[in-house]
Length: 351
Image (tube, rainbow, N blue to C red):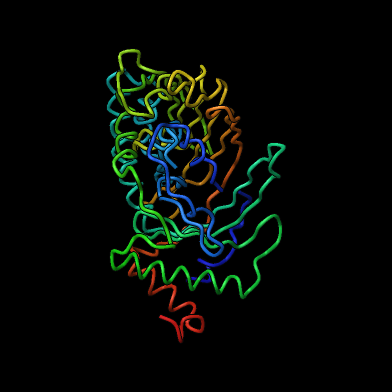
């Protein structure tokens, strides 16, 4: 079971710069000395997915997830359903569909906290920093995610280093299981309700319009264009991004969840009149999710390309990531049992 948990994913790609983008928004600063622990780097669940970071455009994509019903023999009822599916959805039906996908996404976000996964990210270099290609295993620990580096820039982690990381993971899970969220293991989410608010606000912040039907992976899905609702007003720090983003969502109508979403910044986005931060127009984001086990839908891919400025310094964030090898490990106390069972020699005389 944890052989799967510990192995590298079969697909190329991860997400670490999303948190850098979110640093553009006026917010409380983190204390120094917490970044990139030598053994286990951790981020909040919302930073990596997805997943992931609290990038507002990510929320627009993650509001959608796709459920594909099993194939069945054609019947008269199926043919009637097919005829109905050929007609465009009304404005009210589209609103109802968006309400369903938002409710489903809230459930997906909660479930993600119990699933380990392999993340493979490629971060493009920017002249000052080289390209980074990292494969790591992500282990949920309450409101945080523990990272076990498996490979970096083509070099596979050696056995002693992996053992060291898994031991630290176990220590962090013990701390989380006992409600001890601080220390050197991980940081707690600073804005625990913001992610929920971001997803909930989608229905108010955007207008979704019928754009036809399309085929993705052999399935016919609803295609919806979305653009800012000019009547939407909010003081939330993600609101400026919502007000200057538009895109396309591909949704499974029967389940009310999405296959794919793409978003683009249509204008430059400012914070503090541009003195604090600025994101340039043309930034793009793509998000996909699939059914990883029956009835469970999780992020499988995203890519983002953003350029901007923070104070007097330029910011460049370009990456693509894939998530594979999902495995339910449960809450921290259950995940700890799995780790200890799969690595008995490592923890025999520790903790």
